Image (cartoon, helix red, strand yellow):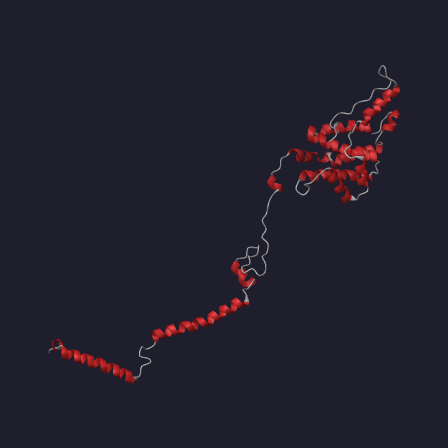
Length: 288
């Protein structure tokens, strides 16, 4: 940044009041040197301005991004706003067909105004007063002897002032907010977790992000594989057949499978056993 930023440009020695021990020529040289210090050092070098003049809009932005060492344009609001401020100013100056020295002083003027705001906390009124004093030094002069020192003519000086009104002064409160208002980190550093779609071969696909339940998703949107459906159908077909014998077993006659002769033989053996038991135990015979 310029070392003379925020300082009031020095006045000139009134005509006809030459200090003792000096000549008009030496006084003129001293005054010229003082005027040369206004808006110095330059914000952009002659080589940098020449490079930018050969670029289109995107190229100008990339060059300024490099010159200003802005590395966080995607996440830093301050850097993005400042880059837009300088790029817009340079493109406006190119439309005015300025000379190299006019480019240099105009860009330095833009930088000094921001520096006054950021470092010296100048109010809008003070910045306008400072601009008036600077333009009185680098703009057109009523004195014909200083005409060769003028950087901008009357038309250009008025255009510069008009541009600063609509670019900086009209949005002065926004630039004050940019430099002096703290912003929470969460506003520019929010992290979001996004679930990606799993491969098609994954056995359990996740429901859609709209919130569809897994049952609806698996039934209507992503039906199960054909093999699973066949196994399920086979189990359903075998189920009734396996349960039917169990029901039949509970209702089947226990004598099924025996012939009449087998039944008679069994009953004869039981009768004989009972008769023998009665004969061996006559006391168990019932009396009338």
